[in-house]
Image (tube, rainbow, N blue to C red):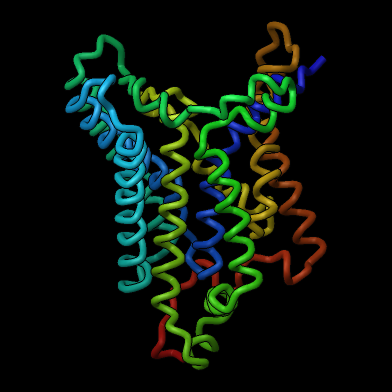
Length: 330
């Protein structure tokens, strides 16, 4: 039998990086930019946070660390690194009008290489005998749970046993959904993504909205990388440990049909599907385990097919997604 009290919290923490990544990518795609570099941006966000945390831990003894700085330094470092990646993407695709698919894939390759280079350097500086670096003091602040959660039994374990970044991910997704659906800014952003020519003719600054949406989306996605290291991985950085979570986050955008609020439960579902093979009895049959690992991708393909067959406009991607905007052709 599947132990839901143990399974659900594991699925939630597995899904939080996906929620950050999918929320950031949804905001980006609403502007018409298709950023396939989310995996690289999450990697850069994570390693920048690790660098900030490492420098602070080296400068201050664990007993003298200040909680605000222990959280704030890696958080700001993560946001700064992710913002620079977003600006680089915008400069190439919005200003120089480079191909968005190629640029996104290049950013993924660059981000992973950037993270592995500086991660390997930090491992050497720390003198670690294993190919990883542990930031245990910082992890203690990021993974700190509500003190009364353990007294509430299964309710506390399922709903209250997470660090603050997990709750922040849900809040950001719900706020993003509200802004996109209910505000004038969201209306302008959706107009830019659907038809930039018409939006430009209506006086909307297309370039500004593309830059803002992509940079904000990149910073949100970067927080997913920071969460993975500082909370999910207990503050341990090791090269190439992210797996395919960045690509799963992009798949989740399709699964949620570009609605960030749907991404909350969907990310937890994907997180559960991602680790389902651990909880289901498969014996020594490795083939069955590999089939279980395919479930998130199979579900995404099925949803994509169903969405295409229903052919509802509100379930389709922005009309100008992936296309460069040439104002002189307006």
